[in-house]
Image 1 (cartoon, helix red, strand yellow):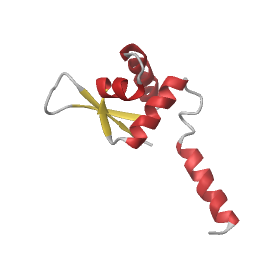
Image 2: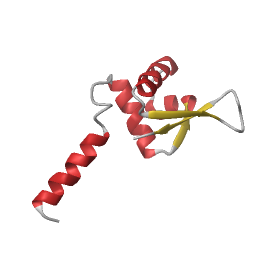
Image 3: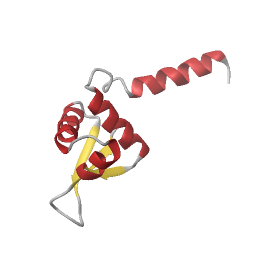
Image 4: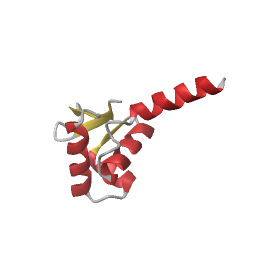
Length: 87
């Protein structure tokens, strides 16, 4: 891989996170955890990030506002929503 190819690859990976860059640290952490895991519920995100449930709710709302996270209802438990990274 040439230096130019490496620079283009690095630029495209940073562009992926451009919508997240100006968000609070909790939102960045939630986005990164979703990047490593395909789909998680809010309670699973709280467990994985060690953040309070209220903070995770706020982070998810900020991420949804930016269009970074997709949310859908769980088929097994309609009370829960499943979150997936959209970038």
